[in-house]
Length: 253
Image 1 (cartoon, rainbow, N blue to C red):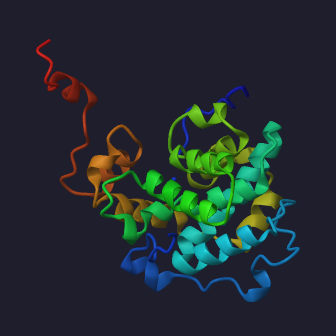
Image 2: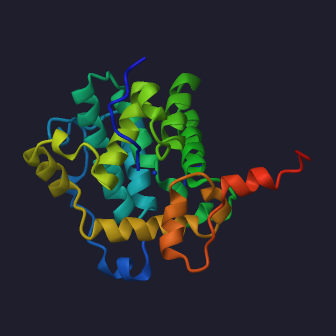
Image 3: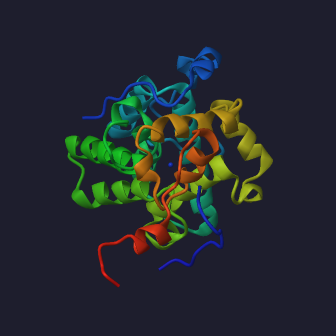
């Protein structure tokens, strides 16, 4: 098994509605990149990382671009590029197509269509990705890897010990959201990626997206980092307490 990279913790039929932007964000949304910026057949990608050119990858790109807001779309593409570079630096041999699909779908569960599911948003996104992959005839082992990568992308430490795609997806999320390992990618590479996929006011906007996606089902934050988000931004939110749950269990002693 690969050794852990030494970071203490990571930070996120498929047709969803616009994901994650508040009313203010929607007014500030930037236009999508022009057709010449879009990944196309043979497109080189950015920072030396190629965008997968399969029909599966192209359809996933169109789907996520058309069904999420620009905040989530650009974030998801950056996660792919940063995750790929982090994997390269760690000597991980990833399947680019699986990492790409995982990155694109990893925050789909924040969308309005999933806010009444009663499940963690990570599971909703993983299920959407699995349905997409199965609809395209992908083998179950590939489906399992992508499902696991998305489901665990906010779970501390564990992804680093699993398959390369699982580790790389979390590394990409950590990099874009938390800045973990920031100096491990050079400024020129960062600039190339963020020129293609900008991140204006990203910190505030991604926290707003997390809040909007998770606040309707606060019970799903028990034991995970999204409880911190709701504690900051949802008045009256009371996080679950593990000790209280143990003490209140039906066992007599």
